[in-house]
Image (tube, rainbow, N blue to C red):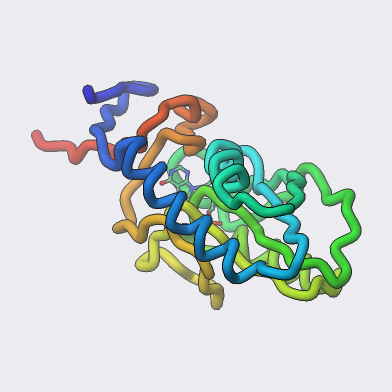
Length: 181
Ligand code: IMP
Ligand code: MG
């Protein structure tokens, strides 16, 4: 795997697609076990979570439903701290087993606001599945239930994660290369 460049920034390979796939299989097993006897509703947080949600949803081989919500709090490489809901939820989630699927939990602002909003709709339970988690960046009282990889607070792209809209279609995950001059 080679380095990639977007907007003049260089990124190097970080987590390969085979490793992502293997970890998703493990998470799916746990989720399947935890959701036994229910019809879980997966809520994919667009845009970034779409590849993860697609792979996870298919790996959890039980009856389940999926829907989508669109939120945005990031501009460039920093969290704006303000979470805007762009596309709302159509489904009735009362008494449902809900699994929110995120690409990454960074400051936690996005997921914190979303989970609080969802809880007002009286679901049976709300759990958070995130492919990536930066525990050192966390600023909110949230704890993801299913974590693919805990990583240091570095900027990453690929497999849904973007730099100003680019790089979401990379199959592997890349990290911003340290600058040495
Ligand atoms: P939070 O609200 O700070 O937890 O940020 C969550 C959102 O910020 C994620 O859903 C991503 O869209 C974006 N984000 C956080 N860290 C990164 C990163 O390293 N690369 C790309 N996007 C990121
Ligand atoms: Mg996102």
